[in-house]
Length: 332
Image (tube, rainbow, N blue to C red; front, side):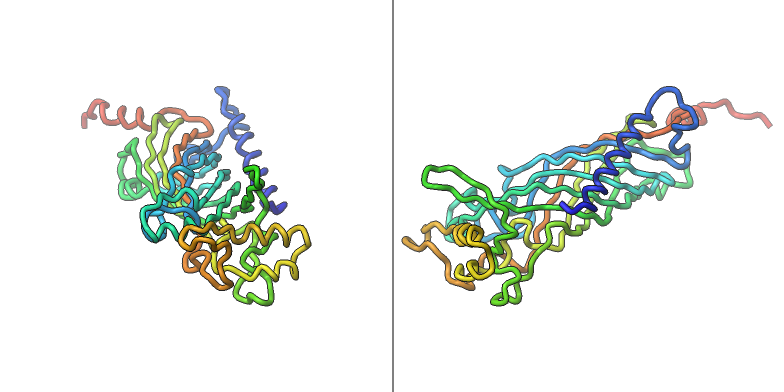
């Protein structure tokens, strides 16, 4: 991972620890965060994450998004966040998450020729993903009720922002004894990245930008504690999270551009075809489609979130509203 991403994630988590440690009953001025108008919240989130790319899939032709989701490869995402609320309908969030993504062709259920093309490809990958992002939260019901005293406990919201994430795809080779070994794929240039013979195949970076977007529902258990359920999709600008995008290359060029050891590994791992459709075939010809270059890779998560408001709360806003609604009428 690049040092800048290490520093960003490290500083974010350090700030979170300081904020959480400041939650104590003695509310001195040194530990005050926010007030009735300006609120600061911190918390944790966790839930399943899903990869959307070239490998794996379901019956029929490979498609984009949910239809080709392999639930067997569901992974757990974990993270933490800090959100600032200048008012009741708008929030500014900074967050950091970590998850694990995986894709395999051998998991495809086979019922026809469309699945067999992908199953015969027989590729796989896995990677750890670390991300940090900033986004804006918008609560539409609170926006339309901002001039009233009504403060619902249940509040739907939408969010969008910009982030940075790091990945490092690994592919496997299995020896004659069934032992599986994983190798970093980016240095192997499996699709001719950076080779003069393949000018349309550019090298890819392992740290890139993404755009998180989604929505959720937030419920206030009290002025201090809230819980949320959130779906967050990450649009990326790469098709190489799984190291599969374009076409097969001629393996003779691996020797030209790679070290002897890496060239030997690349020649085995770039094309692991198993002879299903064409018995006896072990390699695809140069230029044969390997992945879907028209659509980039993506991933999304379904997260449960627990938030804690920082700072002193003089009185519950819900209690204040109840008191106003039940107070005795004035006599003029």
